[in-house]
Image 1 (cartoon, one colour):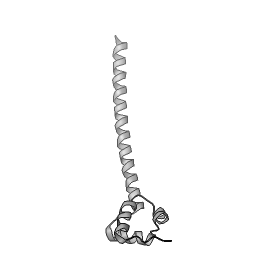
Image 2 (cartoon, rainbow, N blue to C red):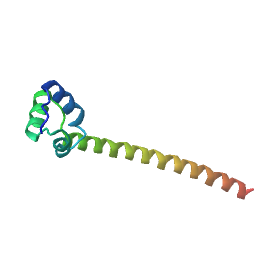
Image 3 (cartoon, one colour):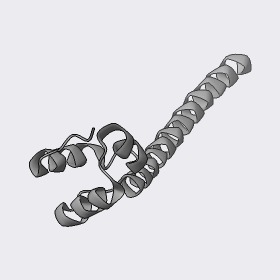
Image 4 (cartoon, rainbow, N blue to C red):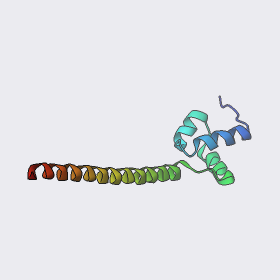
Length: 92
């Protein structure tokens, strides 16, 4: 038996779920069809899953790249210091 969800609760559910949960899973868990999800997303500017997922993925890639670049620079600096220190010891 379908459970009737009042519009305000439906709005709150979709505000929480739509950006992070695939529409198929929302349908399966809460019996909210894609047409309703689509309507609420358009009406209340709620981000949909696919776009939000892509944006989060891009941000993660950007953050990962920045962290990697920083770690490479730190490791190079450490290695150069060690290399110079070792050269100074063997030159004596």
